[in-house]
Structure formats: C-alpha cells, structure tokens
Image (tube, rainbow, N blue to C red; front, side, top):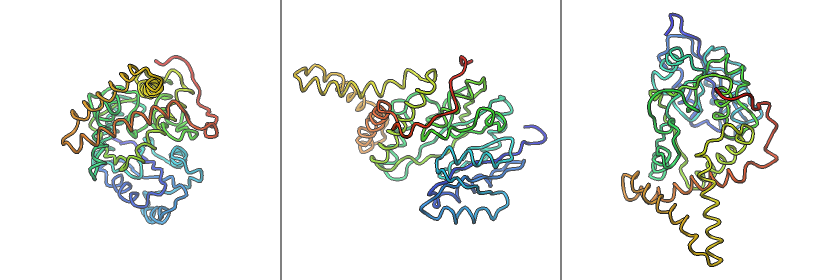
Length: 333
C-alpha cells in the first residue's frame, strides 16, 4: 500500500433495511484502514424505520444519507456514488457485513494488480435448516455453475465478482450502474468495464457473508428474476453470453417437450427429465451433510435451475425494459 492510502467511500443502497443497516454500516466504520473512510447511504422510500435508522447513523460525521426516490438498487448506488468523495469505492449491501481487514486487503490488491474492480467470495450462510441447504446449493458447481465468487478458487482475472471495490474514476468513466436493470447490474457493469479494457480481479481472501432466501417461494422468485434480467443483459450485450447460461433454459424446454411428448404416447422422451432427476439426486447426496439436507437439496436444485431457466426464456416484461445508454462496442480484449 502506498504511503498515502487512497480515500475510500462505501456506497450502500438501502430499502426496508432498518433491521440490518446499523450492523452493515458498523462493519464499514470499524475497518482497520489507515486512510479516510466514510459511508454514503442511498436511501429509498421504505415501509419500515429505515429513514429513522439512517438519520441516527448520520449523526456520525463519517456517514452521509442521500435520497433515492427511484427506489431501485442501481439508482441508490449511483446516487451514493454521486455524493462520494473517495478515490476508491466499496460497494456494500445493507444486509451484509464486511469482515475485518476487508477494505485494506481490497485496496492493497487493487494497487498490486491495477484492477478496476476487486472482489471476492459470496459466502452463503444459513440459520434455519432450509436456509442452510440453500447456502449449500449456492456454494456448489452443480447449483450455480463455475463462477468462482460463489465458492472460491485461485486469485486472478474474472468475469464478475461479489459486491466489488472500484477505482472511482474508472467506474464513473463507464457510466456506473445501469439503473434500467432490476437484477444483474453487477455482471452488466463488469462486462462494460472489461469491454473497455479494464481488469476485474478475484481475490479469494475477500469473503463476505450472505444470507440466502429462507423459503422456496422467495428462492423461486429470486431466481426467476435472475433469469429474466440475465436474458435482458444478453439481449443488450450479445457477446456477454456464456454457453453455460443456456443449460437451464434448455433443461426447461426439454422437460416441457418431454411432458408433451409422453402425453402423446412417446414415452421414450421422458429420458431427458429422468436423466436430470437422476443428476439432481446424485448431486444432492454428494453435497449434503445429512439425509434431511439431501432431501431439501433435491427440491432446491430444481427450484434454482428451472425458475432461472424459465425466467431466461420469458425475459422481463416489456414495460420494464427501459432504454439503456450502454451499448455494445468493439471486441473484448
């Protein structure tokens, strides 16, 4: 790290986060970082006491609150970014807590690699049994594919990382977060950074705890939206598409086709869903730490895969597809 550490601003979107915001902000302010460190909260209209909690937090001169009337996550991040003064920007969610040493490590890695964005592992952890099983699924290759930020790996260049610690000037130069996207804003931003020739760097030492959804209904809704907005990102940036992203929608199509075919007398078409079911059972048995967890995973894996795949096939509603100013440019380096 240089003799004069860069000033750091943590930007945090918040909406209905009264129960978690204090812990999230405290995790930033308690960082053992030798430079200037402050927090800007982009506060959306909330149904709980988020405004009162934010006002109390702002009694600390290191905490600033800006309004996010649009309400979206990306809008909140951009409002906070506009009010920030740091040359390094740390993205923090209001329901997560940064571990000790996170900021210092990220800045050190950024200076060492000259990356535009540095991030690490989304360490899914659950409390109740179902949530713990979801965390297990989110940490497995069978569940979420080969993105290292889900489960770790060697440090190095990456397509995307969890949260992110950004060079502020570079972040602003590519237009920051796309407010027209409800989900998938991080991946889309990292695509634009990479497309502009910048480095996204994965550091497995940067580990942030994440609490997954605690019910099947909420998990299904989450992954359906993930699939919808991934479809929109691919529509806008076709070169960002990865072959692995076609597996889930192809599985949905195969199951639907097999069901229709079997109803028409072509029972041999059930081989495809049977193969998928066998893979789910095998992965559940392999990943689980108990029979109870294996049974839960046997339902969680298809929930994640099939809702994501269905969302990708459907895409977001046309009314939600706002025009984006971010378009494809030249070939990716």
